[in-house]
Image (cartoon, rainbow, N blue to C red; front, side):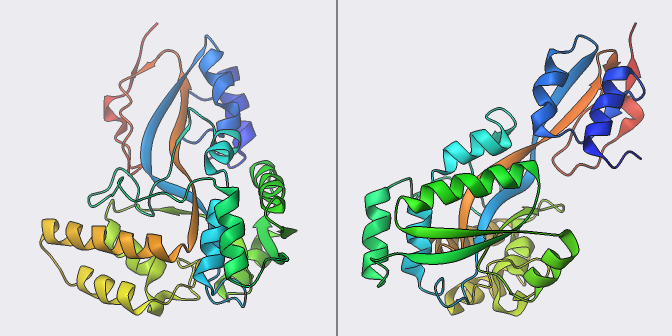
Amino acid sequence: MITESSSRTIDLESGGIDLALSIPNTDADRIAENADTQLILHTGATDRYIALNCQSDVLKDVRVRQALNYATDSESIRQVCYGADTSEPMLSVVPSTLQGYRSDLEQYGYDIDKAKSLLEEAGYGDGLTVEFKYLASSTNNMLAELLQQMWGQVGVTLELNPTESGTLTSALNKGDFEICCAGTNFPLMEAGAGLYDMFHTSSMYSGNDRSELSDPEVDAVLDQVIVTTDADERAKLVEQAQELIHADAPFIYLAYTKSIVGASSKLRGFDPTPTSMYDFRTVYFVE
């Protein structure tokens, strides 16, 4: 197993390996343009977002959370940080591959004037300061700088706090942060249980909940989700929960990231799946 992503790319290019199941999006063009390799993209069940701590003094006001959504050009961030071809626009907390996904939610959009108006209404017309705690990486560093520039236009000072992995995880699990970037994978391809773990009050300060949202209406719907066995009824409840969560604005949607697989140009028969559970029995090679 090759744990270092850049090493996987190099080994694939040199012929040391025939298949790399996870290629950084920054290496995607290299693999696609190399005559000896091929790029395989598929949409999975992973989303990337900015999580806003709904229990923090400033962000407990939904108007501030909504203002930060309006102050963020998410599409520009998606293309710069996650790749125009290696990601898709995120329109909901539920990935587009899952039952119950809603694409019709009214998006906040990039609207500086609306952001300023909401901040003024919330009592922050003269500006405010919030901290962004994140794992230092090339992608997250770009994200942090873009957010800092965008939010500065509406009077929000973003203090950057790149943090080591273990310290960051401990802080996030305790709710010791204001803003962080995170991602969620729905490995069972089932939205209801994922939403419960991410947004139910009982999930606060856990490894799955990064918004610390506590909304009785959301809780009530999610309580129904986990005891409902009929798939269609469960999907309807997931749709209802999405609308409530979207209005609460605990996240700033960034991207649905695609799984990026690199392979030898001679490899055939690889069939990617959204669950990332692969069957290699169909794989073969041609000369």
